[in-house]
Length: 216
Image: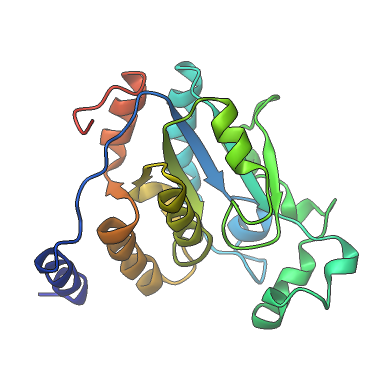
């Protein structure tokens, strides 16, 4: 039995891992699939081609059903450099400046006019952003969470979704990380505590039904 299965068994024995009620007004939130993270030649990047491809499948179905689609990117003002504590842990973040091509959403996702890009300066998509207002104004009751990295901004956002009352649905192929071990461990943790980590087919079916789910 591998470590992930051991952890899952421990969580299950502790009464963790319940399933969330998926609502009828889903939105897709794509976290930080910007060029800085999807270009493996960049210091912060990795080959997330499979993640981008799977996320594009989710986006196409969501768009067909007119479900809201939102993106985030990390972007700093030059004045932030040297003042943001997160950059002490990750100096490469100082490259992510407003207006830089690195903060642009990966073109393979086919972002459409009217799909907002929320600029953030922390790990969670909610940290000092208007995301809560964006979701509330659209009447969203469930968030399909895609993007990177699984161990960082995806985990932080899943926790904040839970704390704000939005069920997070995480399609496994639609999140990625530069470190496979961190990716795997955090998917187990998210699934046990903060969201539902599920297969891509289940999410596509849910979106095609316009938010009606057997999980509800």
